[in-house]
Image 1: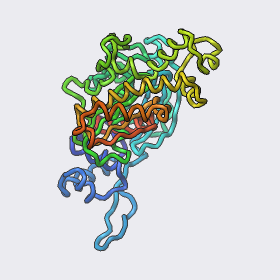
Image 2 (image 1 turned 90 degrees about the vertical axis):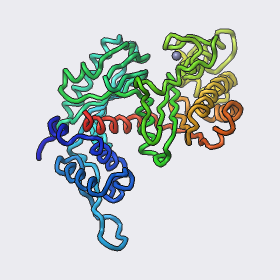
Image 3 (image 1 turned 30 degrees about the horizontal axis):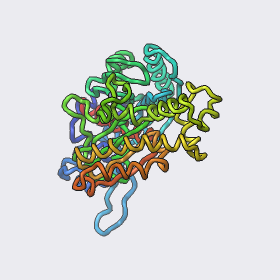
Length: 399
Ligand SMILES: [Zn+2]
């Protein structure tokens, strides 16, 4: 069979198919016996479906595994030749396009600045970047397109509800891009994509319940419940950034006041430093921007803290209290085995960790806290990329 197209997926599609293909991609080379163990599917089902997936060219048989007496198992892995896809990661300042395959090999990468661009311009840049990646394909057609976007999305509809980095409100990304490129399109929020990637490809994949808290320009989370991403009834679960932690707090990007995001994101950190410098407090940060407080960015605050700047360090500690409150709230609600804190703010970890852990200990109920591990990750964007590839591979089987 020489091509995989939508008809193939309509015939081949199904929950078990998507489960098996992703298990092979994440853990391959892997034997059929181990796939059955990990998925809970019967051996004949695994054999039957993997045979079909080999025939379609999505997976391939690999080297003979470790000899442990008896017959040597044939292992399975993703077929990197026939699983190309285009992924667009829309970050706070840039749009990155990838041509990548199901084995997570990046074949091409392209990057465009989106700062100071109007929402419509960013939308047309999205189409241009996809076209650019499309033209880079090495003879094999892309199976699908995945888009990572900041802010709340409705994944099923492929709708970006509002996105602070692009200025989009209710933009039907899936509809627009499918119409233009005639390929299946999948849209996911960056934090949920990050949670999926960190969970399925990291050392935590045997944990059943975990919450990934991302703190960058905004704050969001991805909730892993019983080994799967919990999306919520209306596809909006995980918006921890918009839980209120100070009723009199500053305005948030969502329009409310005192949300966690308005108190503890990198943007909140910048705002606090700007306020303090405006009031006359001294800081290395003002020297770094030559007195132009509008030019202050998170990188200046990280750099100043590294040089021992008191204001920068105290602001990290201020923000750390609120992140600690956010984590304590997560622990009290979900009682997860793991809370993984990621995003840009992790660069300031050493200035925040003690304060954060102190607040978590004080605010979380002992019964919930005692069973929760708290860890940090600086792999955010890489994890998000892995996560969206999973979303795409699952999605093409479930359409
Ligand atoms: Zn908010």
